Length: 478
Length: 156
Image (cartoon, each protein chain N blue to C red):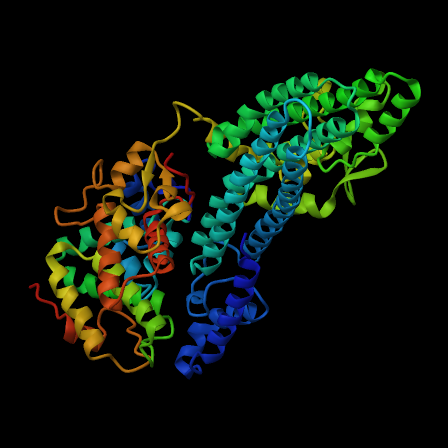
């Protein structure tokens, strides 16, 4: 996993400062016109992430402070999931080693359960690396609208990695429990343990598959189902922990085993849900509800999710990076509100609002939803796919391939931009988008006398998109 | 920038309605009163959420064709591009970064230039890079002396 855009950001700000410093002094006749730009230069010097001083003379759509906050939140969220990934990665290696050294029946079976965890780890790591590269790329792009659009592109990967890491951590806890039972509780049926793990894996598999597919709508559905799935995993964990001591032949033994299993440190959010599982059944239905307090999300008098985390997520939700449903699932999982009885309950309004739920965000969801299927406007490549190779040579590969830069547009708008429809501008008007964009890029490249960099391409594309009012909300072609 | 709403409904009617509301009888008159202002800002002034720069441009070209002043408009569009990319005027040193800014302005300009003027636009770009104008050169409108020399009116 390589680091990050925090560095890139800092460096960028340094660059801007030096740029500001090397700008030629103002001649009197230019002073008036440049006033706005001078103020921006000052802001840049204070550490804003706005474009270069030269570009700042004309206002841009995206507020620079908001852009910096969004970038920072992506970084912090990335860091959090990365830390979890590092932890689970180390634990899985350790488990692989200890499981393979276990004697007795079915050792291979249990090693394979660890391998299943490692497989999940691999896709989560790959997505985190892609997020890191994309956020880095975003930090290098001049155009603020384009930077925000690139940050939004990291969203589906960040979301999938975050939710996937919750599941993986729970799987890891089950593996740890299994390993201890195999090692210390020889009286317990190995077959029972193996079957249980098979069953759990079968329940995990569809969710993991959907998350690793990055299909936005499926991921959102999976997110909504995730608390219940965590509830199931927690339930099963609890059941095993209760069941194993019961199989011990003597009472003393059973007490020892129970203690051993209960001291097992949990790495996943099941740690929050388990104590609730142990409460008398009546209090579960009372819905010891979550509430938003000044220190974060509270359950009674206990802070279950910090205010900083909530604030970070609010920014990501409002910037359109992460979906509210993913964040809601994360809050429920982190606060242990995952039990089956509560599966269909959402979060209280106060918490939802703190997470950025509002008419605007809901509107975004509704428009998006309109089309999980039929009603959705079709996707179009912004970077013409006929020129895929041209773009590949200029760095549009992998998570930055031209397939990532698609926009949804109504047929009529698309036709208008592509020169059809009522787009009659005189017979010599070269308004067709693909031709226009390739002409602008090709011509700029000839003028600059070398191959354009990816950032320069994006810079020109951002400008053209603004001029054509093509929404800078990218979606992947898949 | 909006969410692509510029393309909804009858944008031409909308465009001219806004021009009239602002007291101009043509888009050209509206634009000429705002020389060297980038096209996207003209569009924003006319309709922040529902008009696009390219629509303003198309209207300007339609008017210019009728009045046979296309060449003048081509110069005017270059002025707006240069002012957007190089707000401080022509760079003193044409290093890589500055060369890109010039290239971006010229590239976008040529993409917006009608076929009839494509070849001449290319020559203007070549000339500007071969014999750069003085540092700080910042044309304020289509009647800029240097631009008039490079791309004189031909229409009668």
